Length: 107
Image (cartoon, rainbow, N blue to C red; front, top):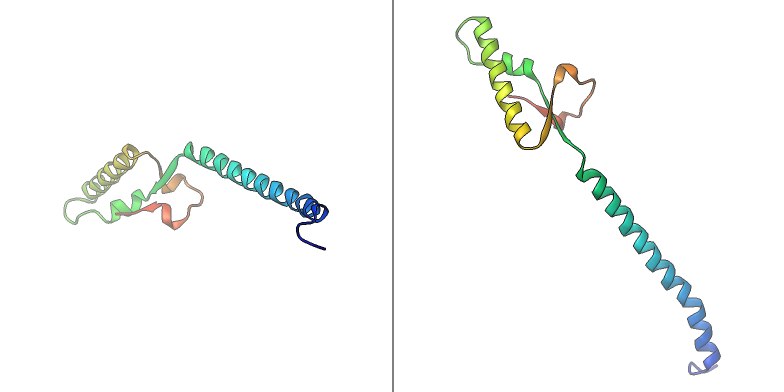
């Protein structure tokens, strides 16, 4: 059979077009799924977890224990305020059941 044979060309096109259409449809569906994920995560809040106890324990030496604790809490609050201004929801470690270490904020 010759490649210029109209029946062979028609046969090849008939076999190839579903593959092309299927690939294009698969690509479109994949792009649509990616777009949905991006839209969903754009509205999700970023979260940081503050370990206020570590801030109190790491506060400067000197003064009474209450003064050191107050200084540590003030530093933790200032850090939480900066994170909040940057768009984070800030939680204290004491109210979090579990979190990845990467979300922990320590002094």
